[in-house]
Length: 225
Image (tube, rainbow, N blue to C red; front, side, top):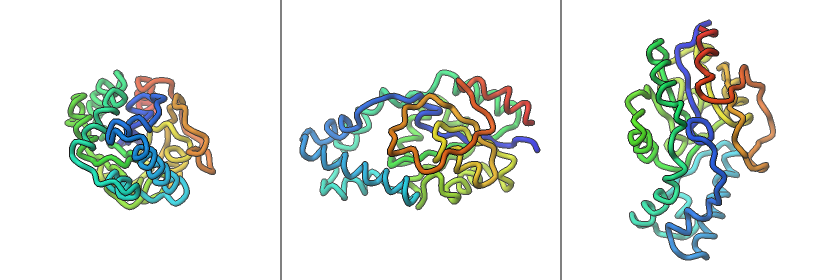
């Protein structure tokens, strides 16, 4: 069975893991420690729902849950705080080009509360948006990884009917590896993220391959093709 598409996780996979205190983003947004604490608590509730129920959330929903009316300036300040932690791995663009030269489609599936437009802006900034054939952000669908419907949405985005002809690359054994394998995809694990224990999930999937850097993916794909 060949490989017609590779679908990537974003944070911790295409963008290397950064250990930061997310409360800082909320403090940058609202400038009030009390409101920032409420927003961070609401965000943690959203992520807990993702782990336990695989249901998605949005940035707007987090603001609403915290009882904060967001302004455009708040949202921009929040994303500006995160900006240094959003840059792609230096291997990403060259890997995308090599896959496309082989006729392999490139997809994105990210568990995120950020709007898709913000992710598209990041990919455009790093000059890879035009190389991406389809992207699914869970803020725009009802489900999060590892729910099968999240993976099916990503497969549909890159026009793949048979999951066995697609590979998922991610940094989380539950969300990414278990989720992809559960729908019949092959899965490649990037083991460099310091994921908090409460986000590990109840099942650790068994990857088909493990890579130490993104550039290591290409020989694996070539062998599977």
